[in-house]
Length: 349
Image (tube, rainbow, N blue to C red):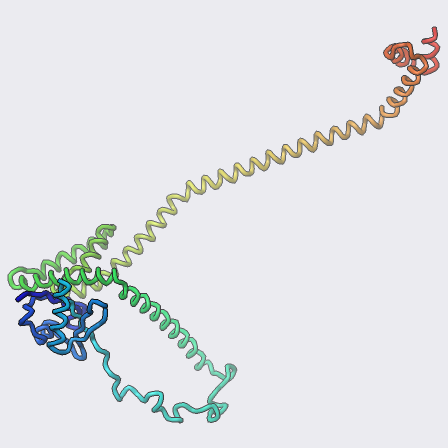
């Protein structure tokens, strides 16, 4: 004879988890169903070692699940599967039951039944806008459902969720045993109101982290209906307060950094303008010097150019006539008389 721990997830049609210890030889399906408090159209299931979902309908199915859990030396995890309700007759006729009058064919439609865009009245056009809004809302909900299903099928998140549910089930069991002797409900109500109000006044990271952990592990039977309504009202206010604080902090950071940024921006602009002015002045100076050299060169070529060339030719001619006389003496005599004939007469003496 041995004992086994059975964890039932989704009791009472909600996310409640209950944990009980049973004797493997005396446990019955009726006891498990009574603890799970199955709702209408709800069934018990479990997952074998291959991950397949097995339905528990009879006592033999329960014994098989217990034997599999005992073989793996672990607790038996049962899940409450809420079956979807079948459609009633009042839900309207199906697609096959609709009469031709409800779905007229293309030949039966008259021009009056299919108005064009120009023939539509202003009362009919807003219907298209409502249809677009409905399609957008349906797509958003489908995206959210896909993301939720992806998170639900994650093995890591599923393990964390199951462990959190198990810890919360232990807390709920202790609360059930001590409800008659300890004033748990008023104490928890006071603590929760105090923490949430303090978070509204000064929301810090660690306080918000503790609130999240407390919301995950808080036993549901430790809260009264009034406290639950207050919590559902205060949590959105806390979220709005956190968003406002983040926006205010971002604005203050921008305003605090704005003067240094403006200073560096103006300093950079001033340095760039100074560099441009210095480069412009350098280019202007170079152009002026080049222009001055060109003017002086042109002036020299205009006034002294032909005369200098004539004097050079006369000196060369005199040097050819008197090759034995030094060129310096020839130049001196020529510069003194400024005439070839006088210079020749003077050199012949």
